[in-house]
Amino acid sequence: MNAPISNTFYSSTLRPTYDPNWSVNPVLLSHFSKFFFLPTLVLGLLGGCRHPESAPEVVVYTALDREFSAPIFEEFTERTGIRVRPKYDSEASKTVGLVNLIMNERERPRCDVFWNNEIINTYRLEDEGLLQAYRSPVGEEYPAEYRSPEGTWYGFAARARILLVNRDLVSEADRPTSIRDLADPKWSERVGIAKPLFGTTASHAACLFATLGSESAEEFFHKVAENARIYPGNRQVAQAVATGQIAFGLTDTDDAMVEIEAGMPVEIIYPDQEPEGLGTLFIPNTLTMIEGCRHPEAARQLIDFLLSPEIEARLAEGPSAQIPLHPGSQAAVRVATPQQKKAMSPAFAEAADVWERSAQYLRTLMGGS
Image (tube, rainbow, N blue to C red):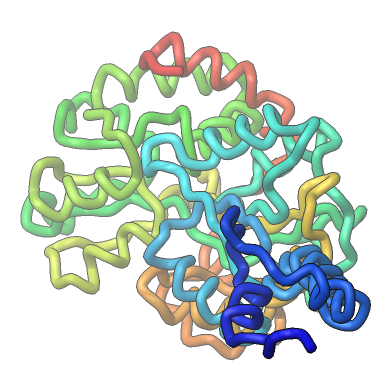
């Protein structure tokens, strides 16, 4: 009669790590392998194969600031069980850095969803054939001007390009009214702009090249480069205005609202509101699914979640004070909307077409890559 099976046999058999000193009685193995050992081994292997499905994930490249997007990703995970793996970019190179990364990864995409904080580079990715169409049910509820006819991208949660003014440094009568005031010599070294090679400032520049024509746009930016202080990003511009380093600067409403709600002596001016003026540029966030992505089903779920009126409301009512575009939004809006101000005709598709020309000129003018 064989010796009793010890507890060591069970603990060793079920032990997940490999032990080179582990052995069993060969007689016991012959009796039990068919009914115990081999099925256990097979189940263990199958369990290893099932692991990715038991812990689904989605990879998001996002240019939206971490403090605004991270809590939303956490809530998505809590609701769906899908882990979000975000990749952020720096304030100075956001959007452009992520877009270049997506282009470089075209043969083996790592990104599933691209949450862009602007739209022109989304058009560029579309032109490169890097976006996968997805007809989001909630996305189709957005106005036609904020979604792709092919279902390759959806725009939501906009921001405005505004002038932020320090009230202590600029009298009411002397307040700027146009982006052209950035080039006025009377404000020399007292105004600021983010380096127009990245983010919404680069998008704004491309829109000006498309709207004004290359010659007029180049003349404008040449004067700005001589007149203004150049900062790494829009946040730094807003902070410089708030702390009195400059009198006013061009930035986004989300960065401006951070300073306003911190009690700093600043206010927003929506530029170029005269009848003949360009109008204020409103730039939406955009959501896209990347062609050939590894987690398409999780990507679709995340896109639907982010496009929901609930999330737009959170972005509108949160620190970034973004502007909801969904017609069913009931959010309390803290900044002006395109319906309340004269909006610049964006010509986003045309801006994407002149992107390389504007970027090349501005790199030469202001330096950078």
